[in-house]
Length: 410
Image 1 (cartoon, helix red, strand yellow):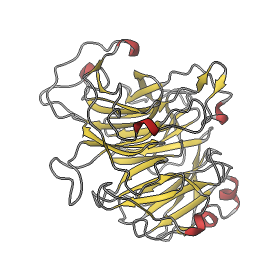
Image 2: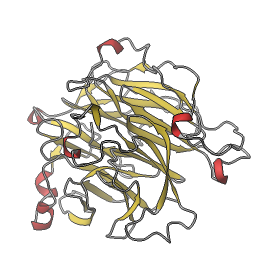
Image 3: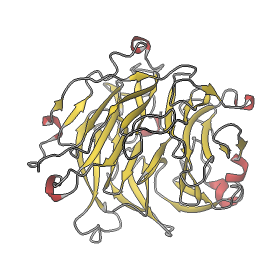
Image 4: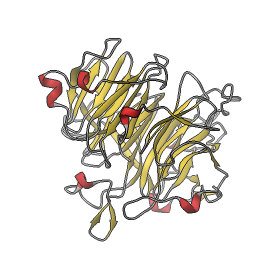
């Protein structure tokens, strides 16, 4: 179970920090570039992108990955506790097993517990539902722990603006940078909200779209051993996704749903932060004028303190520069906390040069940096910060079970 572990995705695998601990251990995918994570009590999902956009040509998003193997196992990986709970793993050996359940250019991911009535998943484990956002922009879903997949193959083909989607750098393909399943126990998602189970995708460059129910509650038979990723079928056809782009700058790096208000969503874009109180029916910018030119990429909403939001920004793409902002009213107003976060010798050394990852863990606000440090603050005003742990590679994303993940990859 992952209930008390913070997951860190890095340029060299997935690490975990247990509650109350100050050391991180290798969890899975040793040596892999992990740009997005998502977690549920029964396991975690990790997105490993394709690094090359052509023969010998590194993708513009990953200039720092030149030393990594170009042929890493790109796609979606399902991470589960080993049978011995990882107790037999050495300090340098992964504590979780990793199953390559979807092969392709994975850019974002989502996971949820999907126990079938009266059954279990392959190998006697409970099922999880999965969604993977890709480049070119598409979304594939599975409700049987990745043994079969539906959707994809043109999920957004019917979107009115689809022909205009692109990306400035080669290979000029839009990509899904966040995918989230709307929470709730079924039925209405709240006033102005959506029914639970639907997917919300943030696309660079394409905007915000809402898809069909991702499923996961229906019965499923016990499965045979899983085939190799290349042999797994894509079932069904494309389903309608609805554009929710009125008023938003469609260079979307992440879109997240406020856990306290179902219809309140926030999105970080190439032109700052946008919010909606109508589940995407209309958006408006909430970044102050002093942010002009800031390139917002990191976003975290505190699930325990209503209204608290952290945003991380750079001076220019791809995430160069370090700026941290905090809101206590859901994004209506902001305060620059960069100086507070990196105050003092130890925290200043952790700052690095690239945009950090913001997150929340219990009563703590967190920042993960490209020096491999994780900094934390427990005071109400987030003015006092301290180092928590350090991993041997830049931190790119964070995740906790039952909480929206955070990533600064775009």
